[in-house]
Length: 211
Image 1 (cartoon, rainbow, N blue to C red):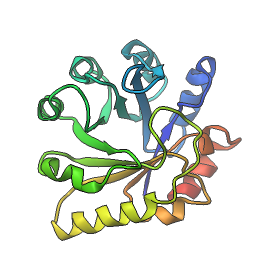
Image 2 (tube, one colour; image 1 turned 135 degrees about the vertical axis):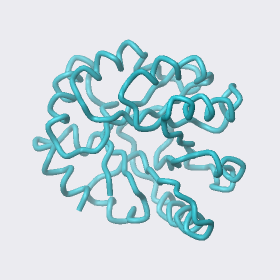
Image 3 (cartoon, rainbow, N blue to C red; image 1 turned 90 degrees about the vertical axis):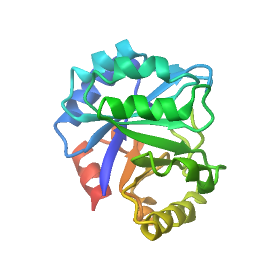
């Protein structure tokens, strides 16, 4: 299992130091939450801020867009070292255009499901995407408690992917720690925030999450 680390709960002045330290660990990706203050209440991680953050790491970026109109973001963010761009289903841009724009840059595309959204909502897009991000907390805030109902949802999606013989990755995001990570064995990636960034030994926690 791969680990993508979120720095959403890190105070802004400490982000460069935290990212620099994470760059020296075994973490696979840096999880970047981009919020426009409209899709969700918070507004964080403008392109300029993410660009500045990226100077401190060579890790690939796993970008989760919580924005209404991602088309105006993609061209800039595609210039960074991006592994995947993930979007929500109910955006105000044409989702097919968003997917095509990312693929034109050679970037993987993911779709995110909120805790109350069923995997059947993905059916029209499964031929076009590379990843599904299952939210195990509500979008918009760090430090939330893991929603246990996520566990059977991940298994249901894994079974569907296997049955249809698709090469789609499953990423789970929110409230994940050493106590609940073993319930997520059907995921390919777990996106973890404060369980890592609040620890005294990043690499120790990351290795335990991967095991």
